[in-house]
Every structure is written in C-alpha cells, then in structure tokens.
Length: 226
Image 1: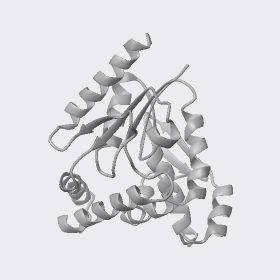
Image 2: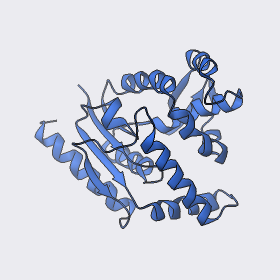
Image 3: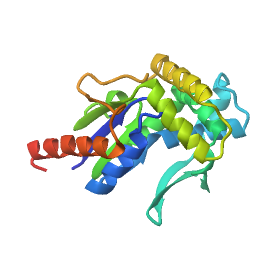
Image 4: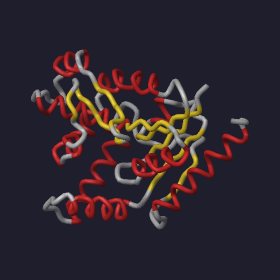
C-alpha cells in the first residue's frame, strides 16, 4: 500500500527544498520530477536536437535512460548511466528545460516512469502536473506558490552563491517567462488541482512551510488510519 503526496507549483516556489525536508522528517521516498525533465533537456541540447525536431526527439526518448538513485544518502541523477546531477542545474539547462518539458512525446515517456516510482511505499513527489496528471488520485495535493518578486529574489541569491553573473531584473524576467510558458503549454500545464491545498510561501520561512505540509500529511494519514 502506498501513500502519495503531490506538491505542485511554479519554478522557484521552494517545492524542491520543502519536498526534500518533509521526506527526511517523515521518512518518505522523494522523486524529483524536474530532474527527469532536465535530463531530457540536457540530452537534447547535447545532441543538438531542436524542440521542433519531432523525429529526433522521438528517437532520443525511445533510447533514453533516466534514473534517480541515492548514493551516500544523496540523491543522484543518472542519464544513460552518467551522473549528471550538477550538469542539469546549469543556466543552460535552466533556459531549456521548460521548452523540452512541454513537448508531448517527452511527457508521454516520462510520466509512466514517475507513476512506477510511486507504486510502493510512502512517496512525496514535486513538479508542475503531479496532482493533475501524474497522480490525480494522490492522497494529499498541495499547490505551493509565491509572488514572482519573492521567487526571483530567492533564485537571484542562489545564482550569486553559484558564482553566476546575473542581475535581479534578469532573473525576475526569466521567472515570469518560465511561469507563463509552463502555465500556457498545451500538454500538462502548470495549474492548481481543484482539490489541492494552496500554500503561499511569500512571507513564510522554509521551516514554516515544512511544518504546514507535515501537519496536512499527518492529519490525512490519521483519517486513513495509516
């Protein structure tokens, strides 16, 4: 028997960090769906396959291998057997991931992999369409949001820590464009599931968000006698 928690929200809303911390505290399995789409984008970029090259992308996805493994208690991402954990977080992939993740065939190939990962145990999965497409029957659905300005501020600080030469204005523009693209794409757009609980993290600390999410999960588990 599995218990599934779906956390959706825009890029930079903190869902990755929150998911990781909640998983650690509740001993849940965490699945980074964004890393899977980033891996597909990395493969396409490496092979110079454009987003509109349907045949090239189909061939690529029919032969791709994406795995998430814990190594020394750290989640690693493997693309065709290669550790690409760091490479999928570069600005180049930041720019390209939303373009490729919107492509129907890529989503068609990755969604079943995600579902299979959630078949056993207690799972918490974050993304943009987990509660609406991947696990529409999830036990708990949360939509984690924040203002564009707050998201840009968080991302700007992260980029500076990574030694990147960017301005706050650039980051804010990128965030707005990314969220617009994700919300308006034809396949599996970013949107709140009707039965998802909305959390605005703009004025909350990460710990406060984590506590809220844990309270929601524990209440639902009590309801189900788990």
